[in-house]
Length: 428
Image 1 (spheres, rainbow, N blue to C red):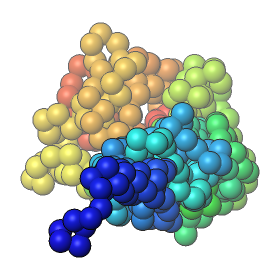
Image 2 (cartoon, rainbow, N blue to C red):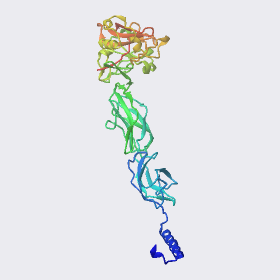
Image 3 (tube, rainbow, N blue to C red):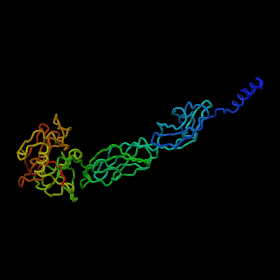
Image 4 (cartoon, rainbow, N blue to C red):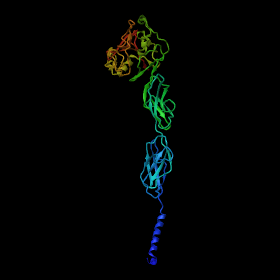
């Protein structure tokens, strides 16, 4: 102070004011924050991770920060945005509910008292989602072909590049198995399934691919039909270790294409000791439902069933019956045997007077009646049926099986080979 003792007080006052004004004039006004946007990370079908860094708050506290995004360049807070704290430094966020296979733009933002600043624009593309496909029903089932298809209800955000159905004799077929290629694009499609084997169980699924994903519809199963020499088609069923026709034979030719005589005259039917067939009441309209009635001599030719199949022996009928619960001690009993084995092989509809069965075996026996050996007349359609076996009892009689609407068991006996009875073929 001694150095200033000769300076007037008002001069010192002016100097102090000037210094204060000088300091205030050098202080910098606040500006917008300075920040950058990092590249998106962990991008999925519907989400992405974003990161940003505020390197300068602009001289004022950063009161809000976060990210904004959209499908156009340089998104702002007028678009979608999510906050991510306050202050400077690094910050992150995960954004959700994005559309698959879509290009997005994102920017970090920061706000202080001056205003809102944005980082650089970054781009990212969300992943493609799995498409969605359902499997259509199987139809037009034949011996070697069938039809199916599917419906692609969602493409996953990308073009469907391939679609069709795949099939196999094992469950859960995929495109490494036989499959169709039915074009591109979403929606309903149909498929023709070729090169199948007859009387075979298949598993089938629709598939769809959008380049990133291949997905499958629900699995369905179907069994191809059996075809005879004339092209008649038959459902088949596996019962235990045997595969049976689930319908009566209706061919009018042997499997070598030789014609089987159609014997309509009752007298000829009674007296002829040779092969032959007819329709019930000689009415061909009974063919689709009940099949043909055959004389036992028709079996003896050995070519009645489709190739690879044969008329079952008495022993093979025994095997069927025992699988359905018939006691082994009863298999050779003459007459009615068993408990409910007849009900198990009778169809669940079509029998008169409450005689329907459960058809739990899938054999689907229908009440087709028979043609008598002694008169050539037709009897009892609606109430009972017979099937021949390939086993002779003696020179004039063959073994058969019979089921009635009024019985739940199975009848076994032999009768004249001139009788007209139905045939079920069994796989070799």
